[in-house]
Length: 205
Image 1 (tube, rainbow, N blue to C red):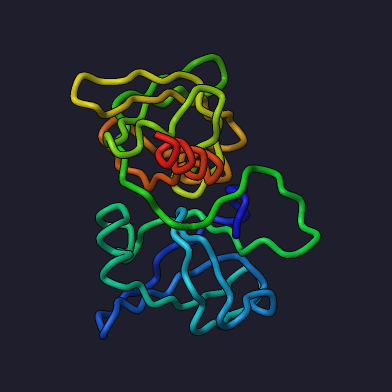
Image 2 (cartoon, rainbow, N blue to C red):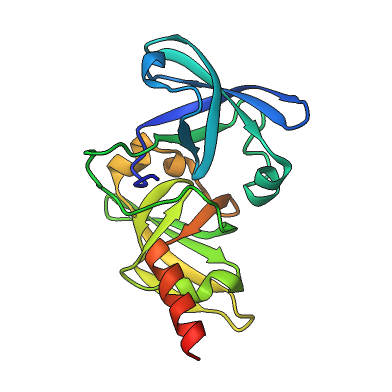
């Protein structure tokens, strides 16, 4: 369980194809706080730590990325040199600062517009038709592991949806979202509450 509040940016240091893809991610965490078998969300994808090392400020951890995870996340996300948003799993007593995030990527979206708006950045993201019923204005969505509030929603003729977000300067600075541009692809996770409401409505229909 996560909250969508990114606590560090990591860099893919190496990747090795075994049965699964073994990926080493460098990060500024204290390795003593990284639990073997614990979960870390990597740009929104929940991964299990299988090894760790380094020192505070220059730590690393390894994860095994399955073919399923590779197919459901942004192409190139696990390539050497890629930057990923990191969040360690929620612990009992931690502040729920964003919204409840499972770390299960629902789809890959595409940035279709990017422009400054005041001190913030305005993003418009295209999401596939399967996600359209779950995205609503003033609702929550996770983009590359970052909890964000949806500002606008525009349904498209083909059933897909475009939704607008404002990225404040702080979020741009402490996550990878500040480097997004038109054409970039992002991991999306819909709000858990919206998922269950849709299921309840389907059963009543």
